[in-house]
Length: 334
Image (cartoon, rainbow, N blue to C red; front, side, top):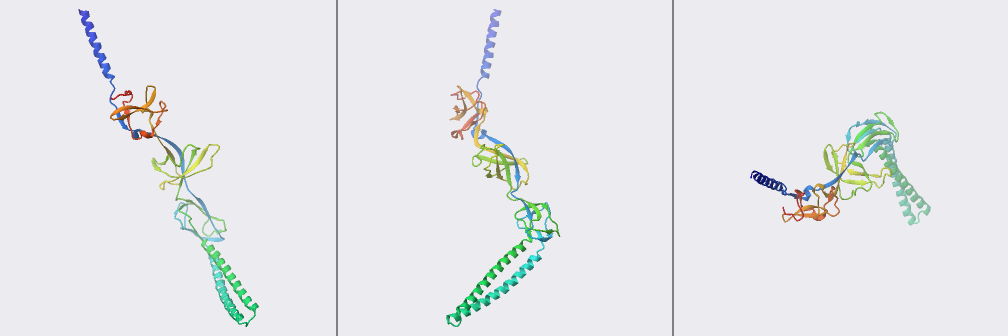
């Protein structure tokens, strides 16, 4: 009897243990989320540098003495601002001389035209010969030619005077001063070096045929722990044969200093389902989607185990099971 009671107790305990084990194996509930909330995108990072469009050296265009230099290295200047003034007295005196010759030639032209008109009227009345009238008209043409030549010389002299004041061709920073006050310059003598500040560019080297930068790629520039979207300006048509790379340039944010180094982040347009949500059922890989409050197994053709899979267009607005999918079976409703 005693042995029988022990067997009965042992049997009851075994049944209780089995019941607890079975309860522990009951599939838990599942959690879903919009597929857009869990999708992944591929990002690629490349070292990039902010460069200036122009690094210019301003030179004197005439032989003159430097009267004053209005800026110093490190100064920021605006477009059209006066940077250097040259001694322009010779050019100014030459312009005055030309204007005197202009007045004289205008007077001579007026006199020649008056004489030509008089002789033309006399010839019509046959009171003078044709030769005299033609000579008078030739003199008018000569004076007109002289007047045109003097006007051209005046324009040249005015341009020489304009060159006595050297101005900034664009918004820039002065990087170096090459000439000082009192220095005699010749055409081509360097005065200042400057670097354009406006319309800076981001220069980056990218692998050949890796990205379609014209569409489907989001570009951001990361600098000082902040990201700013940037726009593609151009891509070089030349390929570096040794490194199999091409250069590209993006529009730099105005807040970033020229010469700064940062990271260009390229994000592909194609979104992916993370590998952790992809499961295998009946020898096929797929995901569980919520349809009419029930989890339904959706096969992902060509999916690879352990790798993200591109999101099919028809699933962009789907609800995906993100927790508990390991316990779900095909046709399961809990």
